[in-house]
Image (cartoon, rainbow, N blue to C red; front, top):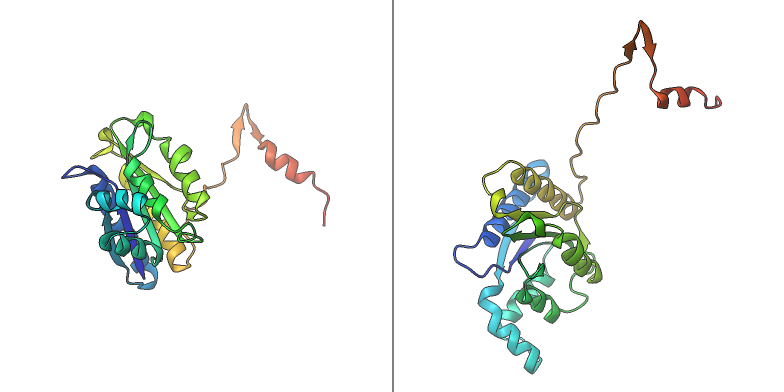
Amino acid sequence: MKLVVVSAGLSVPSSTRLLADRLAAETEAKAKAPAGVEVEVEVVELRDLAVEIAHNFTNGFPGRKLADALDAVAGADGLIVVTPVFSASYSGLFKSFFDVLDQDALTGKPVLIAATGGSARHSLVLEHALRPLFAYLRAVVVPTAVYAASEDWGAEGLPERVERAAGELAALMTGLSAARPAAPAAPAKAEAGGFEVIPFAEQLAALRPAG
C-alpha cells in the first residue's frame, strides 16, 4: 500500500515538512497496528519541482521529475498534502502543482489536508481553501484536518490532532472503520431537595407509544 506525501514547504528545515513527516509516520503506524498492513511512504517536495511546474504551464509538458511526482500521486492509495499559509490561503506553488495534475487523478482517493502558519488566526484556511479544492478534485477528504501554528509545536493538542487525522486516513486506506471514542457514560440521576430528578430526554422516551 502506497502513501504519498506532498509538502509545499520552502525553507530548510521546514515546519511544513516536519508536520508532513509526523502525519506520515502516524498513518503508517495506524495502518500497521490493527491489520498488519505495510505502508510505503514517498515524499514529494514541491520546492524541488518549482521550475518544472512553471515550465509545464508554458509548454504544456511535465519534466522528468515532475512527471514522476504526478505519477506517484495518481498511483497512491492515500495522500497527505501540507502547505504553508501565504496571504490567508495555500501557497501558489501548492496550487500550481495540483493545477497541472490530471483532473481525474484524485477521484475517490483518501486525502488528509494540513497546513502550517505563524498564527492560529489562519487555521480556517483548511476549511475555506484546502477542503473545497480537494472536494472539487473529487477526493475523499478525511474529517479531521490538521493546522499547526508556531505556538502549537511542543504544546498540547497537536499530537492528538495528528493521531486522530492519521487514524481516519489509515482507516480509509485499509477499508477499516476508524476507532471511535467510547460513548460517554449515561448521567447519573440527580437528586434535588430529596426528590429524584429525571432527565427531560428520559421523560420524553417514556411517553413514546409501546411497540
